Length: 368
Image 1 (cartoon, rainbow, N blue to C red):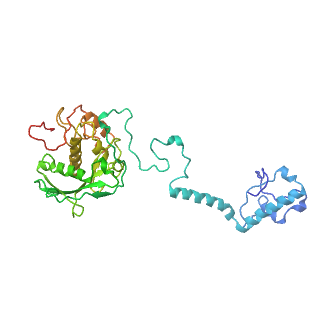
Image 2 (cartoon, one colour; image 1 turned 180 degrees about the vertical axis):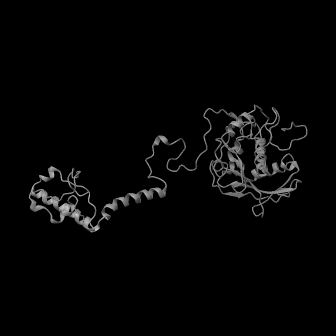
Image 3 (cartoon, rainbow, N blue to C red; image 1 turned 135 degrees about the vertical axis):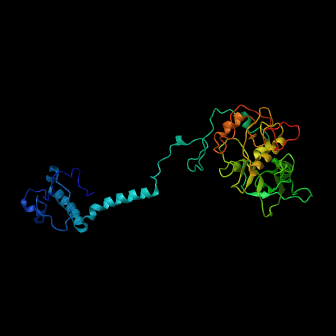
């Protein structure tokens, strides 16, 4: 701005008259601004300007100050020409281009009412899947009451060594396809909650060596190995709840604690510590639930998918999601938020009996 008082722009042609009415104050060089006169070469186009009456009636001191300011403007225009007018336009274009390149406008203030429960405003982290309906009633999916467990670990694991007892680490099964597995525990877990590494490893190996487990199908052979084994096909890993629910592990599509198999997480069979300690409401026997959890998640490592209850009142298939219950209607509701399992189980009213094994003993009522 040139500092002139308000109202310094009019609709007439530019004039260069001083506040005095005397003709002696007319600038000789201003003939080129008169109507139909020829503009001198090299002079910029001038915007229309006509001094208001209030300015014409200024006292001599004010008039001299006004002429001094206008003289500065004319010298600036005379020196830089059209560039004086182009500079503001270039600045606007530069700002527009910068905004276009970054793809976003400057951040606006955050309204605290927009923050949802449990979602950080500054660091929202990963995007969550749609929440389950608030009126969902699945009592069997809740984690039972029970012992304490470690909520968070380090996401690093240690392999439980194979004991040199003449029994552990032997190859079991007669199938054509052989799998080698380790048994691991996440670092940072309080060992007292699960009776220690050896107790966990023994339960896993005994379950997978049982003829009612996957070796009983006659399709696979299994062998527990140590950390130095050259080829490890999957890792049965006791894992804290916070690690299990990470989006790159088991995820949090389903709000209840769960185990899983994650190929991208180093081919890890994730056994959720909270479930290992407390089990599931559909099972009255914690030992039976642990056998189910091992067989179910290892079943995924062997290429098996989820199924539902096949016959009302029969033993549930081991690949049914029995951690959440043995009712197809319950499991189907939970799977509605899981794009990988949304159609795995129909809501057909069938309810099964809890079962831990892929292969049933003679006389048992088969699930399919």
